[in-house]
Image (cartoon, rainbow, N blue to C red):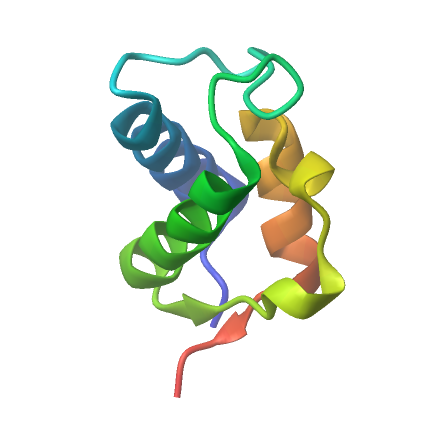
Length: 84
């Protein structure tokens, strides 16, 4: 089962803050501002998979899908599958 939006948002905010090494807001640009780079997006995906117990296939995604917390929530709701 995929977690609800609130759980995804909380996990996304925590994971993004961990990678950025500071608190981030839900609408703060992460990738396009340079706060995190495209390689850090892979770490972000890995953290989200662990926190949410889901599988996210990065091959179908773009760094822009993770540019802020709201986009992360939308992306996970769209592509995540329950972890085996």
